[in-house]
Image (cartoon, rainbow, N blue to C red; front, side):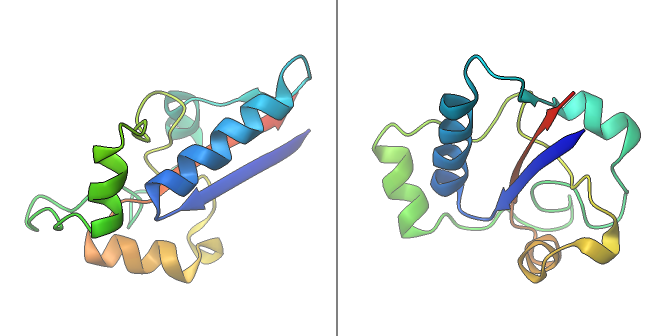
Length: 114
């Protein structure tokens, strides 16, 4: 089958991308995978978790994040937002690695055609 994977460190961009994929996929064969389906089979344990490690304080929200939250924008949370990358470590983007090292979240989703 085919896959559509997207990740971003900008929450409102991730939400907008996922909403557009859902809109375009209505009635089609494209299906979303949940975090539980992915985690069980594909997640590696190093540098893949969303959010800062327990030893790091949570990062201060950026102005963009504060504006998005104040606008009532939907958060990138729930079963269809992945906690970790389904990609092997060698396939991670520079942004994803930097976010993991800095304890910043990465917002990810995955669709597939069965």
